[in-house]
Length: 71
Image (cartoon, rainbow, N blue to C red; front, side, top):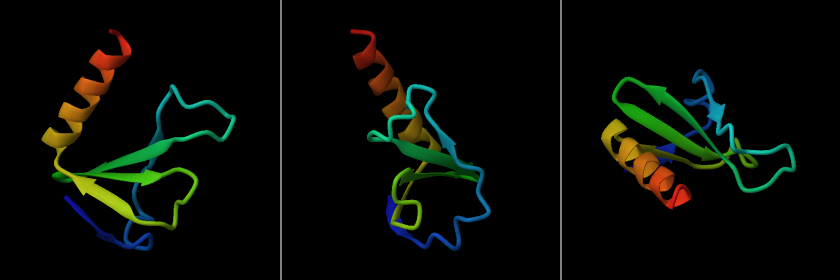
């Protein structure tokens, strides 16, 4: 995991917000995938820090979050 990436380095990425995120401006994250890394940032602070995780770690998180939502 790494959070040292600058927003300038991440500006060329294609960012996506969850389809579960509403337009109310709530607590949302955005993700962008690149070769071997998934970038995660706060959608309200796009110039802030970016968390970088492996695709396997991200898939595990999504799987866990999905199973908790459906429980």
